[in-house]
Amino acid sequence: MLGLLVVFGLLYFVVPSFKEGVNEAVRLLASADIVRLKDYLLSFGVWAPVVSGLLMVLQSIAAPLPAFVITFANGLLFGAFWGAILSWSSAMVGAIICYYVARSLGRPVVERMVGKKSLALADRFFERYGRYAVLIARLIPIISFDVVSYAAGLTSIGPVEFLIATGIGQAPATVLYSILGQNIGSAELGLWIFGALASLLVLGLAVKARVERKLTPKEA
Image (cartoon, rainbow, N blue to C red; front, side, top):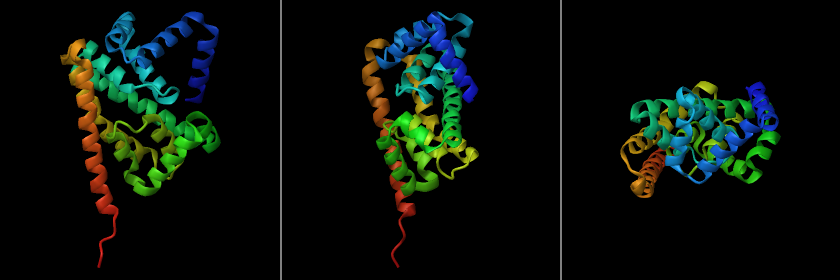
């Protein structure tokens, strides 16, 4: 995994066309321009799913960019079913790479990547919710996907448990965004994104409250 990251870095700094393409994708993600991102992916022809998957991994491990933009674009370009499969699987790849980067390189490197403050907040979250932390974090859309992945790699949570919690936790958002991406027009986009995020936030907070009740010792 680290070797692949090194290869990506070399390509980015040595091949101008590769660097330009990556920068354009980052700009589209940062601006949350779903329609233009769809056109960008479409320009790669049969390689569009591969490029989309690589973008999802990139935003997971290296850049604080909104993953939902890619998921919406995949739904718009590939349809709700295949778009969801592509988004879900590539996000899982990005998550496990973050997990093993943290596992291999340790806390000092992770702190430089995500920031001490963000990692400290994640530490408190994991201390409070333990084995439920990854699942809860995945269900709440305002919690950073990559910070949680890196932080999990610094805990005693095993890779299988991490992947199961990530797969289950990210599924509702992936399916919802993919369906909306397939069925909505650009004029309605902002309203539907807001509604989707609000719905997922309510779901995540409900699960969080349920777990808190379960973890709270009952009075005698």
